[in-house]
Image (tube, rainbow, N blue to C red; front, side, top):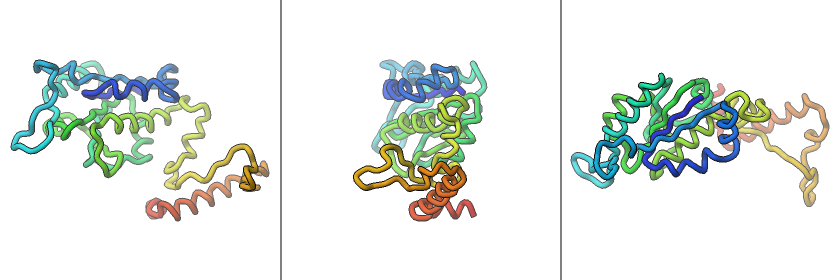
Length: 227
């Protein structure tokens, strides 16, 4: 998988993609993340990428010209399955969407900033708009990082135990059950006996029941979706 991220603040993403699982995925050749500085594509002096909104109002808007130049350059080099724009008014990002997008080969994630992007970018180029939650960030870089992480960890070979991603919260519309590690007894707080039994069927049944109960208590809306 290749993910091209377009941003006017590329250095915000350096540390995120240079650590841990995401770095190992790239080192193994399982994923490629390329961050593009929008200012490299602007025709304006001083590397300007934003301007005032027509009609007035507070805040600046990313101009269409540098974004169009960047996207046209990228699309001349390869075919993209999706051009994603991260925005508060996009569809809510879910594990199902992550599963679907993880099967794609080439993706673009466009990061908005300030008051967003010129609407014509969304009309001409963007194929899907995604929100990571009902709140507003200063820019789309953190959202792009979140989406990339969610996709890359699903790729075969990225996690040392490939079954790990399959037991995460939301994969089966349930929250994950409680997990424990050593010591088995910490100041009188003991690990449930079933987890120490070695009885695989009983353990799996316990985990399912715990996941179901946790979902019922914390996210009953997920159970409605399973119905």
